[in-house]
Length: 183
Ligand code: HEC
Image (cartoon, rainbow, N blue to C red; front, top):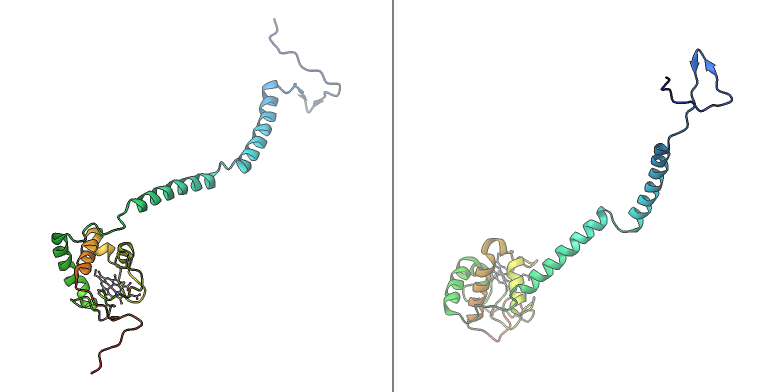
């Protein structure tokens, strides 16, 4: 009994060099795979370019999440000095001020290398937030950034001390209207 699969007959089937040319029908699974992959390729191409699903889209989504988080953190940061009027914090702030700030702003805050911190003129704003930014991030004309050195709390305390210093109405060092004392 023969178990041979019957061959598909082709009119021009030939024997060449003693090798019988076989011409079987392409199996269905192969054709399905072949055309299937073409369909998958087209679908993938369209989907990838049109749906926004790509590493660029993923990146943008992650950035959006991070930005929302940063916004939240920023919003939760104090914008007013919680140590204002707190005598213990002011005493600690005085220590910070004396060791870190007084060299440039003078022990009484009236200014030397740095501008006066007790006159009415504030170049970068006199809100607690603006003053904190001046100290934390520094300012271009010679004010170093202190955040990494002091941290939030010491900066707020130093500013609470500055706020407690006796104030002067006259334009001080650094103010555009400042008049140096005549000898
Ligand atoms: C190396 C000298 C130096 C030291 C130290 C220094 N400052 Fe200043 N500070 C300056 C200078 C210079 C400016 C002006 C910067 C400008 O105009 O861009 C300034 C500006 C400021 C301002 C902004 C003033 C305004 O008119 O808006 C504040 C507030 C301030 N300093 C607080 C402090 C505090 C608090 C410390 C201590 C933690 C400190 N500074 C340490 C030099 C210094």
